[in-house]
Length: 367
Image 1 (cartoon, rainbow, N blue to C red):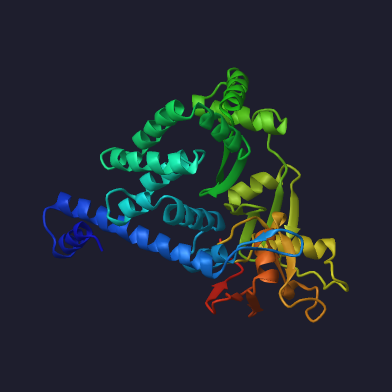
Image 2 (cartoon, rainbow, N blue to C red; image 1 turned 90 degrees about the vertical axis):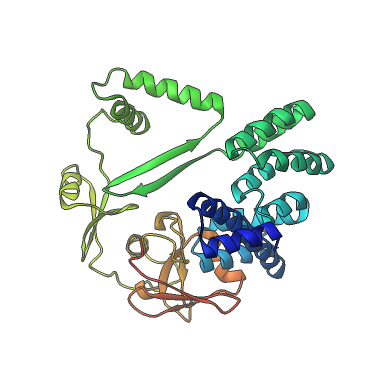
């Protein structure tokens, strides 16, 4: 442990001026982050990635870390990638983090900002970036790197832009109170064009700015008139009604949706088993709706986007409600090829055992 980190830890434990303790805590936190990143890098080496028989990449370390830390798969993969790059490619940045001179956020900005540079140039600029980052914010570090790289390697910005364009995406996640958020990661010109179209559609809507934008967005995406209720799928459960793909909704919300010819699926009636490997459509729909999402610990990919896995492999295990569970393609491959084991303990309770012998329980009504 660096002597400055040690002094910060002593201050943190003994107390003192409130602001000094805040600063000391941040320095110790950076050291802890460095220790965790180093351990994640070791974990990645102990459980290296490999290709399955279809040529798809299997990443056991990500599954282990995600389950143990209750992280999403994406968060675990990003953290392991950060660990590998800092430890192997940018040791100066890792050392600065370990000494508490910068935090993990600024270390990540340096890693991402320099990713398109030649290795020797990257190390050189990262060293300068550390010096700058010690006295500047994360946003300032990002802007400083962009300006420096534009001068050092003008083509790097083009390479970086092309790489980012390949990562465009649209995301959906649930919020409380029957609400949800959609976000889009687009190129700047696409975002400007979408925004202009949205504002044009919103101009004729008599509502506050934000509400008009939301109404226009729904109208453009669904082709419906503003204020029109859209038919959806409502699930009838023993605990009340839910919106498929979202979760529980209020009785009034459910009643409103039932008035627009929405599809109602009764989950209180368990379908009959199927005779072969593939579940019958009614059984498949029931399993996906009842389990809601992938059943790997912490994964929330909707059941509609998942494979249906036989907990006990077919034909030893039947194609029936208590032996089927939705798994996203990534976690399905992890179970099949990376020695994860699953037990069904009844009532939708699944117990996962990792290759390292750690156990994790997931339950039918986990949100």
